[in-house]
Structure formats: C-alpha cells, structure tokens
Image 1 (cartoon, rainbow, N blue to C red):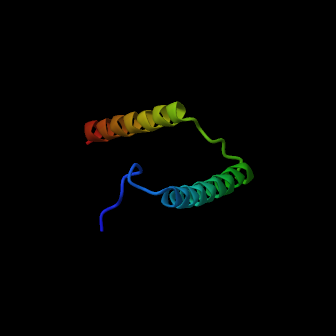
Image 2 (image 1 turned 120 degrees about the vertical axis):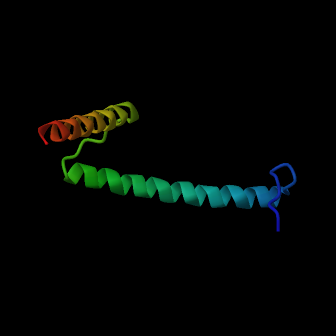
Image 3 (image 1 turned 45 degrees about the vertical axis):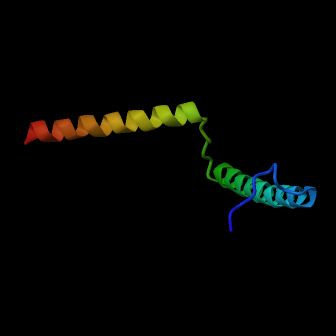
Amino acid sequence: MTAKSTTQMTKAELIDLIRQKDVIISNLHDKIDELEKLAITSQAIPLDADSSRLLTLMNQRIRALEEQLNTQQR
C-alpha cells in the first residue's frame, strides 16, 4: 500500500498523523532530557555542533601525526 501525500489525506487522517508525530517529538524530548541529566551528573559539557566538528578534526589530525611518528621511528 502506498502512502498518501498530505494533499490527498482527509482532515481526520491529517490530525491522526499530527498526533503520531507529536508522540514521536515528545519521546525525543524525553530522551534529550535524559541525556542532559546524564551529562550533568557526569560533569560533561555538551558541545555545540561547530565545537564537536572541530574536536573531531583535531583528533583525526593527532592520530595521523601519531601514525607518521610511528612510521618514522621504524
């Protein structure tokens, strides 16, 4: 069975779909709250997306440099 587009749905179907999405959003908010509580109890500081990307790039660069050093020492 193919899914209807939102323009083909009845009002009742649209309302039902919105309710389903609201449940999903609510569950995701609950999970976010759980994760934030874990971060607070572990004294971890959540990073924003830019900081996270920068940290990942720095870690990759450090690993590459360490591999170069190991190769040169052999």
